[in-house]
View 1 (spheres, one colour):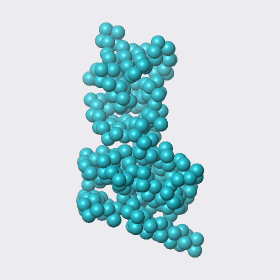
View 2: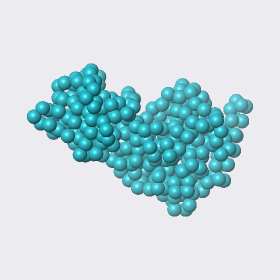
View 3: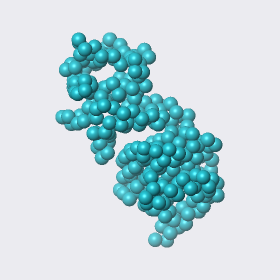
View 4: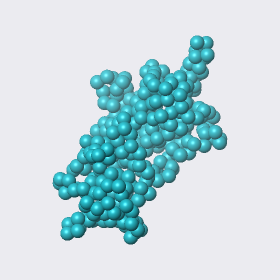
Length: 308
């Protein structure tokens, strides 16, 4: 109990330092403070995010069992993305310490055109992080993308440098600018990329035989393929995707895909659904274009990451 109280005192001391240095939302300009105060949870009837402020709830309830979740809201539409993470087992006080130091270090990297706010002591075991400014969307993706590393490493002290905290460079503005993260959620027709671009599809992803099928055309767009780079041949029922020097071809009902003429045998075949969309598990096209794909069973989302 004495050790736990000491950790709490240390955490409060750290948060006071953050307050003094401007990481804490309460010392933001009156304009930003007023906006944040109008949002949930400060005002239970307020929005979760606005056109100017994003918010994520990081739930540390089960962090002692190695499990953390986040609910992230982006923009005036309050687009929500849920994620779950397997992390190092720890107390929520230790986790809060790590998250606070991480957000503070990221803030130093994103300033002066973008800033962050954090609230936690009054809401434990839930931490609220806010981002605002010209790169607010990218900054929020930095926060949620780095949570596993954040909670698996010692708190970042000082200026955030040094070999022990070099992992933070994976979530710097430069690193995130070259990374696209897109989530396709079962039953939802809207996807949002890390750049903040929202794409509305005319068909939603679905599960069939334990596989998640996504519309190939919109998947290609999310991976940076221009509209002219997705071609459909009605006569042969073939989709051609062109991105740079890479050309992919696949046909309805055929498990063979070609990449620059090289044959790739898939374990499923593309299928056609109304209104004339070609559907295929995201992994095949994504990996052929250099992206990585993960499936989140809890949130029923396919998460696609492209870049560094």
